[in-house]
Image (tube, rainbow, N blue to C red; front, side):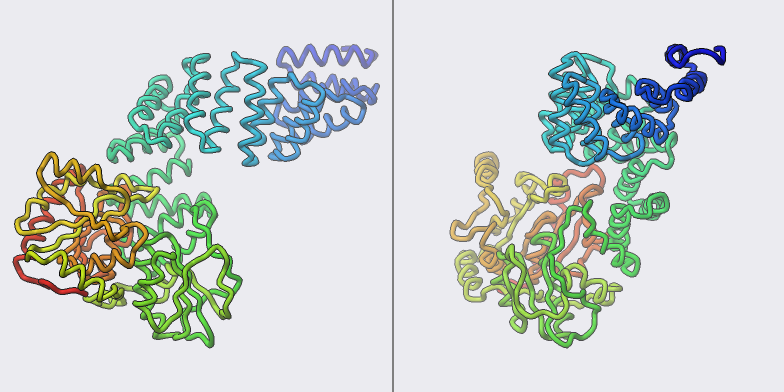
Length: 602
């Protein structure tokens, strides 16, 4: 165009070039137009849009700011898009709000505002923003898809599936919607449906990285770890530095007991993302499970990062350094009943180093712990922090970094370290063993929010044990077990008794007395296993293969160093729980035949 062209003519030609995809030429022309007439807001707006098109967001933002200063209110939406490209979502939301105040019917601005809010973690507002977009454009599949993503972030997975389904009705080949729908179904525990959804995604896009990882997660939960690993490695073949895929890869290698390979994968994640606390936490669990305590305990401290879901008590005092304390050491329980019982085995060691100890525990454990550790102050944990005088403090599970640095540091306490109410236990023993039958306590379910289903069996799986002669079987399981016990009596003619005067869920002191009245305890990996072990009862704990196996049962030990009278029996890959129980039943029979502890009450 001739040098003498007017600014308006240059603008029109610049717009035409940009529409034809000749962005560089368009930018040159609009800059010439601005040189002639810098006060035209539409010129600045066009330059900003062209610069945005080629990824020069910072320059684009400057152009939009100049356009708005000259009165171009319609540039707020484009300004917000530039801010998003620059990673400034909070400012972008403000600009989208200004744009929508002017034009509340802008579907693009409602959608992009929702994306900014999602990035800020404001999923509720994002869901509302996407809902406005779907109301304005009911045939816009992407708006429904993003609405589903916002609902999923809110944990409203059933509703998110409705939005994904609407997006898929509008666009049947919407691979991302199929994948995220699978993730939502996974959260609802609908694993076969979830797998079908992600398989549909992969049928359309066989190398879709996200879908391959989702498929790996689902196959792992379905206990198909080898297939899951193959799917994950396909994802990593195209994106070897995908830390999400690498995290799943490490989990699968751990399930398959390829521990060194799992640690190598976690080390790769840490090298790529030095602040990835999840990788450090998972490495700690493998190292601890292998008895590599010097590596494991320091990494275990990463459990307090927000992503792990654990919230520390808000005490301001300095942490304990493992030595003697000139004053009072406050120890506070963490991670639930089982972990508090397990790590309470460290208290005798602590007391030997610093006798002034306050121990804050889950309220249901307080009476039992107060009896068991009479030289310290045991208090029930409340919402409010302990107000007494304290010099240093330490979370309970962190004691191991000072006191359990090798297997030789685990003392052998055959009679346990918790003391049940002797009078109550003796009365229960007299009541249960009145006919000379041996008393076997049973527990078969874990209610853990993560992995509980994988750790749980059915009462019917215990049939081989329940067929042992001259035995009386007592229900130690927390929660309502009436339906399973009734079905067992109806179908097999076997009675498992529940003592109505002991609340297995809330009366843990009574449950401890009941366990002390048993000749043996057989349980899955749950609170019962820890309580029976800490009481020194002969106990068989059955731990799951792979997913949901917990580090403190270790990977290669048949006897627990925490609880010397607990035998650890591991489920093999694909092995039904009934087969594990059958093998344990033979050991229980031999134990009872030996006469070990007959009639003894601890």
